[in-house]
Image (cartoon, rainbow over all chains, first blue to last red; front, side, top):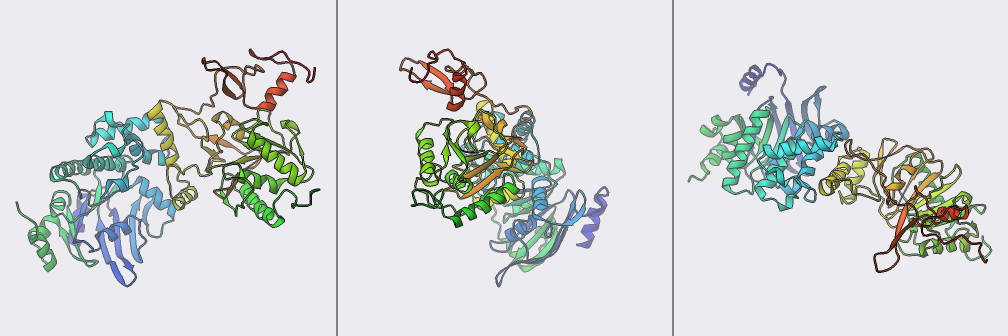
Length: 270
Length: 293
């Protein structure tokens, strides 16, 4: 862990600080554990995968990190424009501002992340308008540009997402999130519920965007192929605890913990 | 007590008025903020101005002169019934002249004659929440107001332009009050929006079914939301009034036959009548005659 941190630190000399530092993050649901004592550093430009079975606390952890859930203990220190700040103890307006500018959240179900009654252009433009864009022409231009980047035909800018296929909705959600140029993207099962060919296309697109924009990302998934493609680093969770973490290839090729071994060996081969 | 002896002055009991006045004071102190209040059952259906009537009842004193308008007119059902209601239960003087009234209850219009200091304009509001049709959850809209999270309001205007080529919202056009709260000005035409700002009169808004009161103190800055490249346009029908010839008043379109005949007349009946009495005449005006001549 410390070795890897040092490697990433050397790789990104321009940003000597981690983008996100998580310390002792714990969330309880009554007596049951949501996630317990999770800690890691995320460096600029790094993509981290979180895998584990259903109910292992992946989504709880992600929601705590993104400020959707209030953790019971721990710190989530984000390197904001004005220096590192603990987002757990931030005021609600500050956190909202952060989640509209530097952060993005891609939901598993695009219906959770999109406004289904608003046109594609309006969906992409919402974050811009929320941070003060007041020029219709510019907003529309940005929306068109982003639709193109996620491979949606610009002619469909005035169509509502309900007229889009599942894969297009997911791509629209990604465009809507990335339009303000965030530095950190949270993704909750971004390819869940899509058929395999659409998944591949989406992954390809995501990989391109993440690399080109130099985004940091935290990707929660139960699909090991997704993390193999996207993630630099991998964290394996079971029953709310992190049981193993390391470089993705290292963890997947040489799993140490019994649960990780089980997980890796359960992947279906075609 | 009034002469009838059957009701407390202005129908509502004093405790209820006190509760409404407290809400009003809070609303005036925080312009544009929606203050919840315990709306009472009134002897009229929701949608007929129960909120406005309660606010008016809480403001009236025996010395007041009341004017009630509905879509600008003094003689439509809603206006007549509310005016009679207060004549009966408060015994106050009533008028149809904007300048003589001290309290004006209105539905969907602001009078054309500029209001003056000391006047109170009471609006009937059907849906006080400007974000309602964008965000159905009340808990969420309240949080959005608290955090000044108003990006969604512009999404609505964006959708208008994307679909119609211009901001097609023509009534209940959202405004921002003193750079803070986004407010629904009740379903007044957007033509009236500029009159909200820097108005000398106190403006009170009552929503009975939704149990909300909000207010604009005199001389409050009220800005209609827009885009830099699609500025706010307080449009009206491009005609003069057919009766009084006014060029700058808000007009109603009146169908006159089934051959496509129509005329445009001032929606503010008092304004139109005053102008005609002063000798102004539009294209379709009958020659002015003395009443009873």
